[in-house]
Length: 496
Image (cartoon, helix red, strand yellow):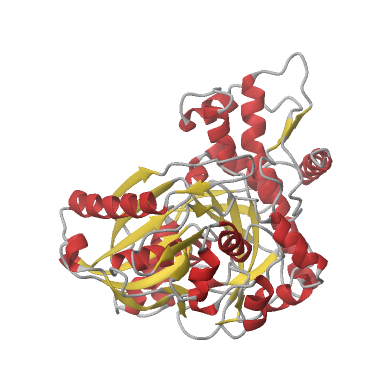
């Protein structure tokens, strides 16, 4: 039997999964990651903790599987995107904590870019809106605010990377400084048409080119894991940002196929093939995971607070003891009782893109209970995702394509049947949960397996994908439309 090891470094945890060649999970290990909040709107991670936890889970997953690194055909890496790390090339040590994708400190730099009239050019080259979400302005902040960083960068002493690059550097003991197209596409420094770093964008953000990693296709030879780390050298054969990796793991290889990942945030992607499609509905265009040098694209919408709203119920309100308790509490009432929650804790992402929005709970009466608030919190995940798919469908129809016909789902919250049924009701299309919901890690394993000959092609991967449950809409379309109208009204209330 052939095995693949997937390293899945996420926002809230580091995980490693051993898959067999049929895409089945053999063993899984996970460790939580500390969240650092220096001040409101700022979110950081310790890069050394990212590395320690990822390595520890890889070793644990191999031990649980009763296998060794010698049994692994290849390693695939998938990662939280946009999170920004800068480290010293000689010591391998970070110069600052990683600035996490949720962090908003770079908004002043984004405002400056908009005021300089650069937003249209940036969007044309990168597919991205100018927003603090992306890595480029985070990198600029580090160079401008860490003592001596800019001079060191100009001297070629520093390296920049998203989390994938940081892990590759550590896994290869500093031998490889690289990233893939899907992660590079999230920096606001990368031309997705040419698949190259863009000199004009580097100049606009005052970023020295020597900082940047080499960019490769998502399925490619990236180097070899140092022998002493896992006990044997293993080829690193696949790398992709978590959402593009999930799109790949869901076997969404053709234009018009879409998936939604319910994690800390929610991320919906629709493959557009080799066609770069610009959204008129507040979505972004991005590079999909690529197995060749040929650029492939997707339309994406990002919800900043998805499953994180459940963590807030647990840690902030202390309404539940554990995240798994939320479904039972929400199901203890027949509906949200008119309560509507908009969890704009760090502003609103697509399709609204309002960094100034703040969370709100409306419709509260004397009869409102924690159960109603818990249900409204769960429903907020579905409302935000429905707004994304409606925007996606509008773009598709305007472009002469068919609207999304079904939605494949994955991520931690997709196991919640109440949420998935409500999602199908709001969308009016089937929501499909696969047999293997660890599609982010599976995508990385697939990319590594393609590179090393475990799989022939994507047709073989499509044949492996299986449905676990299909949620069909049950709510009358008029009722769903009324609920969406109430949601949009609540969103307008969040703008300060």
